[in-house]
Image (cartoon, rainbow over all chains, first blue to last red; front, top):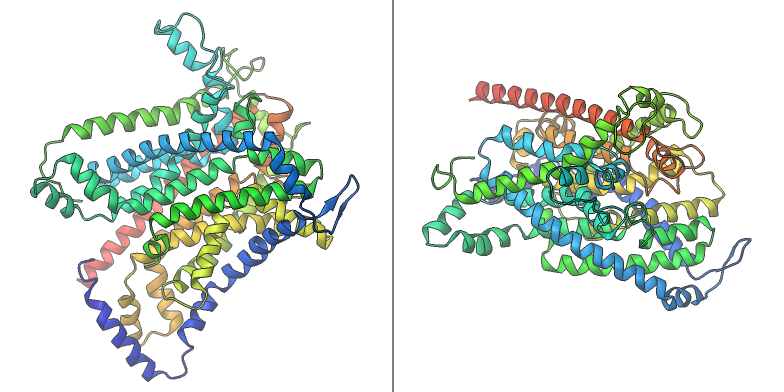
Length: 309
Length: 280
C-alpha cells in the first residue's frame, strides 16, 4: 500500500473524465442505494420494525387471555420496582466486567503473539484456525462440555487429585459463578482475538522499529504505539463480548445451578407465560441499557471512520 | 512479514507462546473430554468413569428418537444455513461495495447495522414473533426464522466486507473501465476475483452463525425445530452421551470443511501467483 496517496488525486480525475465520456451513467448515490438496498430493506423490515413493535407493546395492557392496546406505564413501574430486576442487572454487569477483563487480556496477548511473533504466514493461519475450530461446535454443546470436565468426578478434579494437589474433589468448580465465567471466557475469547488481530495486522512493523531505535522500552512501545493503534479492534471486541454476555440466554441458566439468572432468561420466562407487555418492557429497558453501553464505547473511537475508509 | 529487529527471540516471545499454549489447552481440554465421553459404553452416563467403549451414542444420533428427531433437524439446519449464507454473501458483498462512497443515509444505515448486531438475540426473535402474531401469520423455517437469522448474519457480513473492501484498490476497477470493460465485465473479471477469499470467508462465517444459531431462532421457528433447538430440548429433558456424540461429529465435519476451504484458498493464491508472474 505504498502508493495509497498517489491514486487519490488520479482517481478524481479519472471519474470526471469517464463521466464526460458516458453521460447516461446513473448518479453515484443511486448506484450505492441500489447496492445497499436489499440489506437496508431486510434490516428495516426484520429488525427496526419489530423493535418498534415491542416498544409499542411495552405500553399495552394484558390479562390471562390476551393483550390490549393502551398507554400504560405499569409494566415499567412494576419492572423497575422489583428488587429481582436490579439483582439480575447487577449480577449480569458483574459477569460482563469480569469476562471482559479476562477476554481482553487473553485476546490482546494472543492476537499480539500471532501477528508480531509468528513469522510464517502458514503457521499463523494454522494457529488461527486452531483457535477457531472449537468455535464451529455448537455453543450449547461447548457449554455443557464443561460439566464432565469440572464436575465432582470430572477430569479436572481427577488431575488435581492425581497430582496430589487436593485430597478431596473441589465442589465450587461446577454450578457456580466460577463455572459461568469459565464458560463465557471459553465461548467469547475469539470475539476479542479477531478484531484486535485485524487492527494489529494494519500496524506497519517499521513503526515498532522506529520506536525501539528512538530508545523506547518494550513497555513504552506497547503503551504509546501498539495499544493506541489497535484501539479500534479493542473497542469492537469489547462491544461484542459485552453484548454477548448481557444478551446471554442459557449459560447462566445451565452453569450457575440456579444461583443466578440472566436478564434474557428472566425475559424468556415471561414470554413463555405469554406475558408479552411486561416482557416487552423488560426488553426495552435492556435495549436502552445496551445502547448506552455501546454508544459509550463507540465514543472512544470513531468506529465508522475506522471501518469505512 | 520480514524478520523484526533481530533474529533472536525476546523473552516476551516465550511468555506469550506459553500463554497461547495454555489457552489452547483451556480451549480443547473440555472438548477432548466430550470427544472421549462420546465413545462411552451403552451403560455409561454423561460423566466419568467410562463404562466400556461403543458407538452406541453415534447410532442414537442417526436414529429417530422419542425425544428428538436429530437427522431431520440436521437437514433443516443445513438447508437454512445454505440459504442464509447465500443471501448474506449476495447482499453484504453488494452493500460492502455500495459503502465505498458516502451516500445519503449511509450513516443511518451503518448504525442500523451496528444496532442489529449488538441487539440481544432473543429480543430480535421476540419482535419478529410478535409481528407474525399481529399479522396472523404462522412462523416457519424459511420465513420468520430465515429473517431473524439474516438480522444477525447481514451486519456480520457487512463488517467483514468493510475489512475486505478496505484493502481493495479502486484504481484496478478504473483501469478496467479505461480498457473498455463494461460494468458487468468489471464485476465479473476484476472485482469479484480479487474479493473472492474475503467472500468465501463471509460465506463460511454466515453458514456457521446460522447453523449454530439458537436465541434468534427459538421464538421464530414455529413447530419444526432446527438442530440447536433439538439439542437444547435434549439437554432439558434427558442427558445422555448422545449430545457429546453430536459434538464430536460437528467438530469432525467442521474440521473437514476447514481443510477443504483452506485448500481452495491456497489454490486460488497459487493461481493468482501464476497470473502475476505471467503479467510480470
